[in-house]
Image (cartoon, rainbow, N blue to C red; front, side):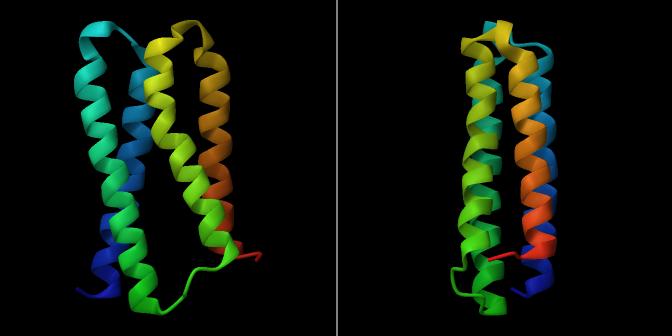
Length: 113
């Protein structure tokens, strides 16, 4: 596949992962837990596969900013599960999700290390 294909899959998966995470924050009811966890897990896997595929095509190696982006992804992917376990902490989880997404966007554009 071309780098553009990997990039499109990566960006669309990140946007959808973020959307479904915030959807879990909006209504963390037990009947929606299974579907939400499956969707966010599949999207997180797509983000990882497309991200590493893009990295391989562009021959980046494994720089520090990619490790930091991977940490941001792990945080974002885990937050929807936490929202169902602690529905009272949705405000803090939302702030953490915004910070994780903002940090990932900053890392991809600035590539500081």
